[in-house]
Length: 471
Image (cartoon, rainbow, N blue to C red; front, side, top):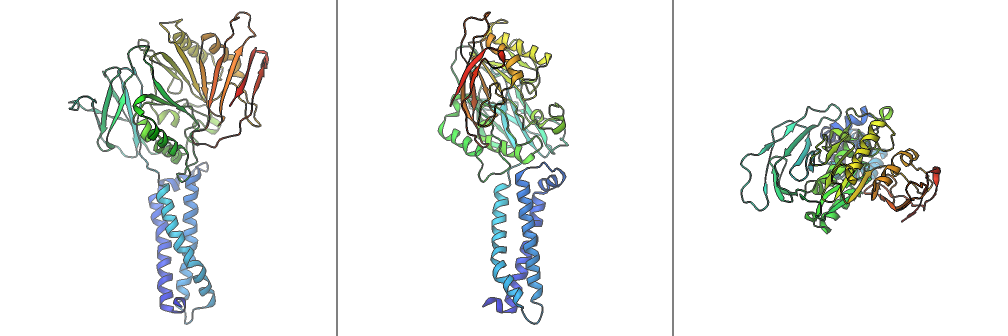
């Protein structure tokens, strides 16, 4: 038996000890940023703790292997060493192989993007963004898909200062003077050498279009049983992305505002989608979680990491309260995004901004749009298993504005169920022509789903709202 041979036993033991000691050292060097954050930040999420656990097990097994190796230096191999050898050598080897495989799988790429959005007129501009942990000079080359030559003057990316919160540099390039309703190709040397494509918006209000809408895509920082990644892959495989104008996520894109691995996982999942069509978010409570500073707008990853409309362009109907709440017109529809800090907040500045957007949408100001859509994270009417969390403030302050202004649908997330609520308001004699307003909850795009429960509203809160939930 090989373990009865002192020399062989020593060789196996020492070799295993070396593997078990050096592998976690290499892992710590490879994942040093994650491990340091895990020790410094107790709220750091799932995968880092798994990595720490694997490293800890390696160290324990390594110490056992060291004991086994040094015990062979004695004249006789004692029974304890034989026992440890028989039972732990296979575990040591399994731990090494399995641990390395796990770390390789969980080593989520740190590059975020490139992804597309609008900070200006969607008919004539496109914003490209990516984030990496090094500074440098990058250019984007682009051309019409029908052209054979790239533009003579590539557009350079601007770079922000290194963020202290996560060590990332933020790169942004704005393409301007594009042609409406045109397909373009682009490439960014050194970041994504593949040729990617995007479409500009039509220059009229009667062009039909499709959009991708989902939400609650956050996953604890892991890839093995992640549901957001295959969901996006399924979309790319089953749909022609050229047919979609843009994508909307109803919030909860990361597990927590400071979970770096979770943000990286989000950008890994949306890579093939957001690099081909603009990707917008109505930020949720998870990416806005700042403990005591829950609604602070300073140094927020929900703002810093993503590029959304930040200024007003009244000629082209682009408006922004900040990068959290913003609005734009696209063809026949007007889209209003309400971030987690604003939806239901009952602050005058916000409500005045929202009222102004609704007037633009319904033609009280300007020409108006045929359809009006509200996107936010929190649903005003909330019915699910063991939860009766209607947002009373939103129902009393915002929903009447939606109803009077002719909003067609309020699309929300948060509940992790797929539901449709048809709401009528028949309690106001000044508004006799009651109509249905649809409230849609988009399910779970990666987070765990929840058991739905039918809701019924009969003049709740004496506001005159009636309706029910269907699934």
